[in-house]
Amino acid sequence: MNTVGGNVEHIKCTINGVRRLTMAGGTPITVLNVAEKPSVARALAAVFASSPGARDRTRTRGGNPPLFEIENVQFPFIFTQGHGVLLPNHVPPCGHVMITTAVRGHLATQDFGPQYGWSSCNPQDLFHAPIETIYRDDMVPLKQLIEEQSRRAQAVILWLDCDREGEAISDEVRTVCLEGNRTLRIDHIYRAKFSTVLPQEIERALRSLGRINENFVQAVQARCELDLRVGAAFTRFQTLRLQKRFQEFDQGVISYGPCQYVFFLTKNSFISDLFHLGT
View 1 (cartoon, rainbow, N blue to C red):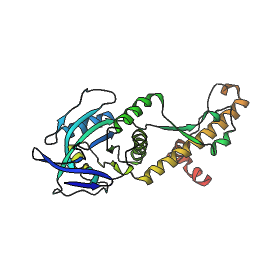
View 2: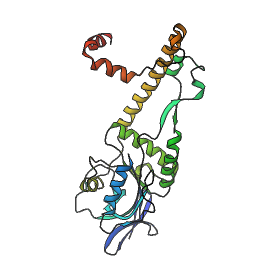
View 3: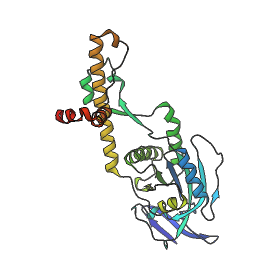
View 4: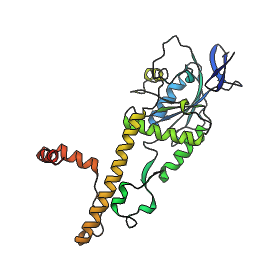
């Protein structure tokens, strides 16, 4: 029987007694899973491989980053999820091909363009200068791997830490996946919620897939932009000013970090009152 779900045609079939939903033409749904670090990717792959009837098609092990491929991993059909609600046990599972890899924290970083170098602009210009997204040299191969694997997938599950930073990294991975696979739909990118990598926790996460928390993403992005603009502007201002007055600062940088500054003031009681009065 053919069904249509969100512009993607699926075929319901039973193979060797296992109920499956496949892409039109009989190809199982391929899902790219991205974890926050390699150890989590390995744990996920081990749980996927323990699924009834699963077949491990991993070609090489111990790579950096790791890359696993497990066929016929059983959980409720992925395109019916995305609400973050735990599906009841009577919802039947079906087989998916699970490709699993990992990042190492943030994929991207933000900085000013070369036209805003130390000798190219006034520090106050940094408060309104455009910010560019940059992938460091050590992150480029990882970005390329995710782009390559996203082209094999019809869906993505993001297994990043369940905090604000994890949501921001999820957004970075989502951006790379969408750039790598122009046919990948944004509503086919899911967020897994889990607190441990125990099998029952992972299996529960596969039955309650949700979405990225966009409010958390924006909160982290706002904090990072403030850190960059304020930190860079004040670091340049005080460094250049002190270098003109004191020879011993000729070769140094007098760094300023707004987050560290507030933390220092509020954690030291003998100046905390002064800090609050100043604000």
